[in-house]
Image (tube, helix red, strand yellow):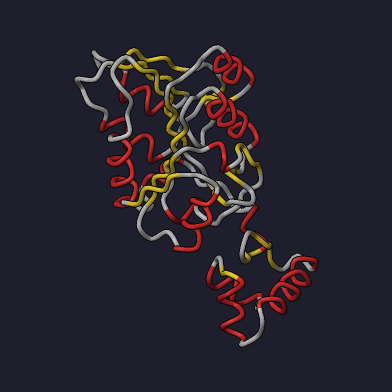
Length: 246
């Protein structure tokens, strides 16, 4: 069973029961034993490899070349969710939000707040955008400002909409990321926004990273690709999150 979990990356209790021709109750008992031995990690409705929570965080250049087509479609769909003119939008750091920043309409007046250096560089010359770059220490991995200064600056902001990225998304563990300082900034972004839209390709769904920064119930909309598993989509929608697939 451990080997199958490692091969699939994530597998449901139902799939395991069918694979081994046993009841789901038997699978759950076996998974509990394997988790006690630190061989797998139980998640909502199934299991993932034990080391899935401790994978090395990929840097922004590496992530920018992964699942390019899906991220392009997700970013294009996100443009359709932009609020009216003269609204305030927060753009979280991430490879998909960078793509979104390149697609923002040139004729729509808005205030954009970001802690991502690549997004700030992209929007700095836009005549219709009032750009606010948050202060803080810039992480080499993500090219994003983090730290107490960043969180404090967000405390005085109230945004109409935030586009947020995540390293992991499950009903049980919510939105998560490997780095504690990134999590603190993302948490503040979610808290300071009237509406929260998560941009995440389907490879992030069903994954749990070390630090949770928001409950899934804090999210209004998830924009993802059509490869999302049906059971994951239904579970997310049951929490009250709108799921848009592209």
